[in-house]
Image (cartoon, rainbow, N blue to C red; front, side):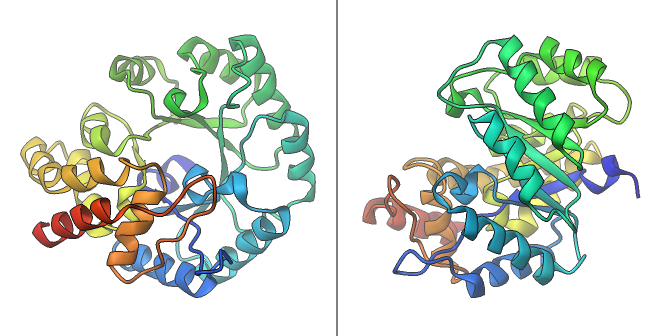
Length: 294
């Protein structure tokens, strides 16, 4: 199967479950994976930003990579999050990681440094030269402080065949439409925003990499499928069902909200690592109410 088929539809950015002592909870991670695969997810993203990857040790990351590969055992494609603001460290990391069983990398733009477009271009070309896997670019300026402009994307594509798509999570829907209008054949445009994913796919995007989808998996998968079929009314019905939960899970930061929701569903605990803290009682109560009404 072609890569653009493997990574179309619904992907989810998995959280990293932790126990009350802050230790990675592999039993819950397995339960989360099974919940998603059973409910029809097309692929899984491991160690993305939702996984709290910035506060995981190198040893924990390697262990998670190995565990997920073995536990999934080829049931769905796997994408590995590999981004950050230290280009040299990311390049070195690619030399050290065993990427067997993974289909592609998802690499978020450097955060805090706020590089220029030339800096972003040089950063990604350095990753491309070191990566044995195709790369999905990831633009989320609200979280990183920099915006990967479309012209920079096209420049990257002219210089390397490693770049196979982009997860676009800016608040600028016109930017997504421009990507769709000018992308080359087989270049994936993937929504990174749960609230507008249905609209993006209706406009021609290839799917979503979702946060809410790891909890409300069946509904999100159905919404994206309906969008791929051009069923606007069906998409609207499902987004109406999901929009309150989508709003709530981001109110106190990500993955604080989604972990609280998953805890209410009995899939994993609500624990996060500092500087994040677990959801407030007020948010938990709101999530419980929204879940019961869904």
